[in-house]
Image (tube, rainbow, N blue to C red; front, side, top):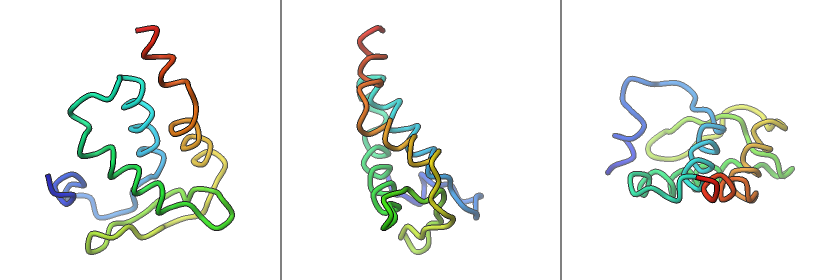
Length: 98
C-alpha cells in the first residue's frame, strides 16, 4: 500500500507524532496484528526522523513529496509517549493479561 493512500488526501495539515506512538503501543499490546504490517514500520520511521538533537521528539510533522518534515517543538508529553511505546514492557503486559 502506498503511503499517500495511508495518509489520506483530504488532510493537508500537520500530523501529530503522538498518534504514531499510540499505534506502536497498541500494535505491541495486541501482539502485532497482521493489519498493521504496513503502518508499523512507517510509524517507526516517522518517530525516528522526528527525534531532535536534544533527544526529545518533535510534536508534529507534514508529509511533502513523500518526506517527513518536522513541524513544531519537542515536548515532554510526546517524548514520554514515544518512550513508553517503544521501550516499556507495558504493551506486553497488556497482551499477557489478555
